[in-house]
Amino acid sequence: MPSTLGVLLTFLAYIIFIFIISQMTKRTDDNATFFLAHRATPWWVVAIGMLGDSISGVTFVSVPGDVVHSGMSYMQLVFGFFLGYIVVAYVLLPLYYRLRLVSIYTYLEKRFGLYTYRTGAVFFLVSKLFGAAAKLYVITLILQELVFAPLGVPYSLTVVGVVGIIWLYTQRGGMGTIIWTDVLQTLCLITTLVLIIYQLSSQLGLGFSGMIDVVRHSEHNRIFVFDDWGSPLNFWKQLISGAFIVIVMTGLDQNMMQKNLTCRNLREARRNMLSYGFGFIPLNFLFLTLGILLVYYAGAKGIALPEKTDSILPYLASSHLGSWVLICFTLGITAASFSNADSALTSLTTSVCTDLLGMDMKGGKSEKDLRHWIHLGICIAFALMVLIIGSLQQTSLLKTIYTAVSYTYGPLLGFFAFGLITKYPIHDRLTPYIALASPLVSYLLAYMLELTLGYKVGYEILLFNGLFTFSALWLIRQRDGKKVFV
Image 1 (spheres, one colour):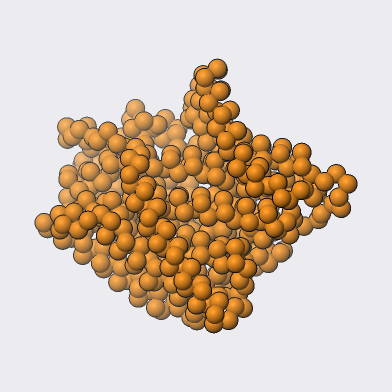
Image 2: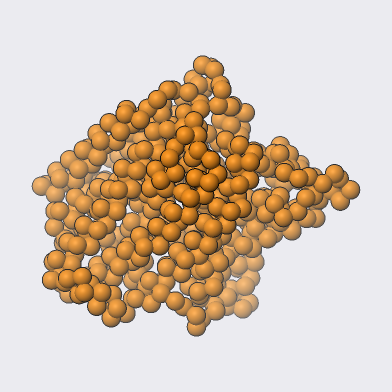
């Protein structure tokens, strides 16, 4: 009971602090504030907040836990991430700022037409709704197991309560509020990670050099995999896949780009992108270091680890590492999950308002009221998706999310690549069918490669998907049409 009370008090204190920040940063309840915070946010504020948004609650538990099966090979993907951030900073951001976009999918309308534009927006909505809900599922499950289940609260009520809290502090301030709450969440996350590592090393009697020795001599410390081309963990697969995952999950993602577009100008937005992209490298290395220390701790104490790798950190934090680690863990997982979920809800609302309903930042009272109802509807759909994901029983949610992204963002990758690389117009009405067919063809190709050649396709399925979309657009191009320069 003392640990349950400590977790509950930590959670409540964090929520109160978030509401204080949201009240302090709230300006006006208009579309310009909700969508892009009047394009007046300092770049370093956005960079700090985006770091916390990228490190979700899923990352907090999945990356350390996956050390058991994959060692530190996740760093290969992280190195690829940074290459992707460079592409986004120097290819996509200039395009978005030149066109002064609110929704980045407006580019697809300017370049191809209404059908492609709406198709891109719908694929984003589906993908983001699933991905963000999967990430929020982690915190709701942990809170349920540690706090609310012992109090007799049903899981569905926990989910509704958490989503309701996020709705309350985002429904007026929008992106103008979220950017500043994300700064707090990022600082809480990093502080928590460092404190947990420190507590682990103290309990094991390790100094800084002792931790280095544990990592260096661990059987799980392998980063680079060059010797197995068929493995999904092969270096080149991971590096290239990491770059394209960032291009689609950041550069073609309304959620992440909406924050970048709040910067004052392109120069500051690019500085933000490169800064937070580089900061992603040491932060993920710390998560993997935590994973090795957790495995070492379990071995030293004779503790049997859960089979589900996502449960390793929550299990040890709640049962073996002491109340302070549990409180730190609660703070970190809450900060990471809320940082991702609040901006996802805002960007989903923005996409529905601007892409599907045609609102703009100068909307009057009627549009503002409609935006409030849409935001509430997105929150309800979000809560339902969390409950659905809870029934899937995945062993590693991070892998599930990346795999889902590879299928749902593939058509977006193909659309934007064709638009930027070629100047041809297309038969716009056919693009919805292409977007639906490309993931199916990619899945069949992956199945046939494994069946006939023993080649297991990893996250590079995203490249296949994007390539199929690009090729199909090439086939439906208007060869005699007037070339487009957008």
